[in-house]
Amino acid sequence: MEEIIFPNQIRMYRRLRGCSMQELADHLTVSLSAISKIEKGYRRVDQEQLVRIAEFLDCPLQDLFVNEQNSQPEVIQSWRREQERRNKVNEKSGLKTLGAGLRQIRNDKNLTLIEVAESSDMTLSVYHRIEMGQREVSEKELKNISKSLKLSVEDLKEAIKKLDDKGALEEIIQRNDAKYKILTAPKQSLSSQSVSFPESKISVFGTAGKDGDIIVDFESETKKVIRPQQLNNNKNAYAVNLSTRRLGTLLPSRSILFVDPQEMVSVGDIALYYKDEETASIISVREDENGKLYGLRWNPDERIEINNNLNDLHKIVFISL
Image 1 (cartoon, rainbow, N blue to C red):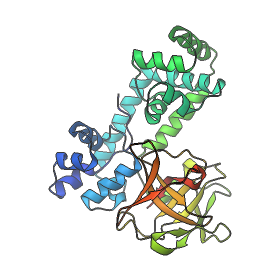
Image 2 (image 1 turned 120 degrees about the horizontal axis):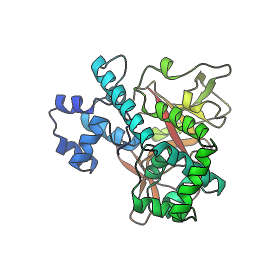
Image 3 (image 1 turned 90 degrees about the horizontal axis):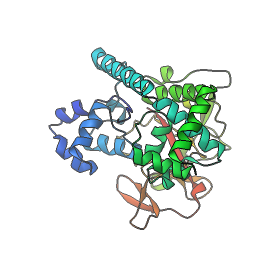
Image 4 (image 1 turned 90 degrees about the vertical axis):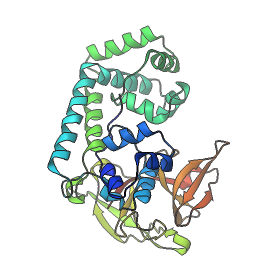
């Protein structure tokens, strides 16, 4: 079962540009079936892929998202019906209970998401979807997960059943549902995406530097904006003005990048890479054949070597267009 990430207008723009699905698949180096699922909103698309799709289709990034302002009502309604249907399927098949149980047991054992994912021979995104209750699990995968948690499959099932019987998983399921709704909701205007609470503003920094770099002086904020809902109660998050033209026309110049310096950065993410205390570059995180991370900048393409201190990488978790 594929996770629904967001409804999109990729197919419409591809047809307007006279491009085939195969051409887009070749550009992203994915299969033709993957493009079909992406266009239907059934397959995960990471930040880097979104940027590359917008670049290929020569359109602003925000135009790819279905939203209340520029999308046909039947498209939005169809999306919502599909999301509701899949949520019901997941609930009936017990995926939400399984995911919540795995999360509770993993936390009890003081294991991280990436530790369990790697020892289960899964990508982080796949295992995260399992814990969110949005992906089916094969017998082989469940066996690998059980081994990672140092339990037999039977003991793992029994432990989850006991937690469910005690009502210990309901809160986790509700949190997962709330997070999933945020991640998969059709994009709207900034005012409708954000919820205003007392002290809900977030500081914005950033002025233009040399060579497309951004100067981030944390003692000199440029303004405050409404904090996106998914960053509520995150005291470490901050925002940066898009004060560089290295991205060309992919993002409007007024865009604001919301950053979480404590969020784990992985391959495919967009991040700020700090060369020193104040100078940062916007990069796409890549991995070479030796497993070493490096950054890629655009317009023109430029490889950026990343030092061993991953604290210099701050993940961009949300973009206000």
